Amino acid sequence: MNKKLLDVAAGRVKADTVIKQARYLNVYTGEALCGDIAIVDGYIAGIGEYEGKRTYFADGLVVPGFIDGHVHIESSMTLPRSFAAEAFKHGTTTVVCDPHEIANVAGVYGIRFMIDDSRGGDVDFKFMLPSCVPATSLDQSFCTLSAADLAPLYKDKSVIGLAEVMDAFAVIRGEDAVLDKIDRATRLGRAVDGHAPCLGGKELCAYVAAGVKSDHECTTMDEAMEKLRLGQFVMIREGTAAHNLEALVGLVDRYYDRCMFVTDDMHPEVLIQKGHIDRIIRKAVALGADAVKAITAATLTPARYFGLTDRGAIAPGLRADLAVLDEELFVKAAFSGGKKQKSKVRDWDFDTFMVSPITKADLDCGKKEVLGIVKGQLLTDDCGTADGVDGSRDIVKLFAAERHHGTGHKAACYLKGYGIKKGAVATSIAHDSHNIIAAGYDESIVLAVNELIRIGGGIVVTDGERMMSLPLEIGGIMTARPCGQVAEQLEEIKRFAFSLGVNEGVDPFMTLSFLSLPVIPKVRLLPSGVVRM
Image (cartoon, rainbow, N blue to C red; front, side, top):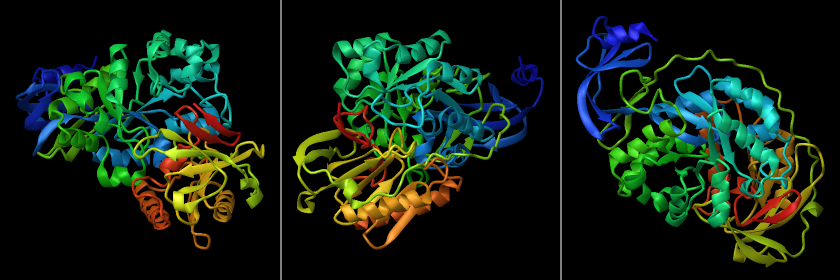
């Protein structure tokens, strides 16, 4: 017990900082109240009338710091502390992240690397251990992580649970490998997150009965309501490629104590230009949600779900994680509480790019399946088959190649809805195993993929002559460059992609990167070939 905190709370000792005459939101009662907020050693000591060594006058509504309940930092293409520097500007004080992207590229080494880099900033990172590396037995990742591999990581205080259990059908079949991971997390009293798009009925009952307590893949109200009725928390996702808020905003007012906001995957330019959880709150309110309930869904609800009993509200004894909002719910200032952990910056060694240059012959596939992009979603449509590229019908080539072990596995099919009229886009960000994926026209795909191999991973766009690239030197999915710099480079290369005809309603890179993820319906392309869910 911190006796200094009690002395300040009782008025015997001055606080370190007092937010004077603050108008603040009490998320327990839904009231807007007034009072001095006394802070000592990063924690709230009391609310009422207090004196402090420093006084701050908040010009706006003080609310608890926002919590992103599920995000893959790797999708920002930057390291955790760089992501945190931008997210904090938007009032985010806690991020619950799943490092399964880097785990697919570098195993336990990658997870420890992310944990080490996350320490010491204004955002408090909590980690959910990757449950499915690889995502399914069909995938070809750098390694396979077992329950025994993950067990030592639970000793780190920043690890709070098991991340999205993506192989839902392995759970339903009762496969020991995944059930062992769920059982270990459950016995430790940790949260177990889900990932079960379109799952329902008895299969969903089995999935929930196994101990999976949340889901962030709902795209309709019917799907979300079925999961709520079975006891799951629903994470309403609004990221760069997946936009589920508009379909699910009706949940907020009635079920805000069972729903939370998450970004899942977010590119750096979206974070910098549009915001983080604050952006989702503003959009929810614009769509008709009650502001107080939307804020509660971004603060108290995730704190309770994850067992983070020291945050999520403004009350004595809790971390002084706070944001100050103006009338339009934009963040004017943010406070970060709690004791900072010492950062462990380490050099990295991610030598996981083992693939030979390709030729046009590698793209020959004859009559093959056509994957259809669903705008604003991660789902795909089964658009039948095609026997060749047809730009007039928006049918282009889709190509995938394994890159972790030099197996030489390559596959091709067709893609509809991407919009590209010439050239190609290639990337080593291909969820979740992060092999190579490319879309466009044959000759340009060869150019783009071979340039991607030459630079050791990242994103490459070409019109067949000119080439632009964003190198990602850390495992082919991240860079140590600052978030702002990456955002500028990404915006430039994205404009180039749009100039080639990529549909404006499609993120050229994030959308492409999910076309190889076999745990989302309906059709995907892996280096081993086309798979259907």
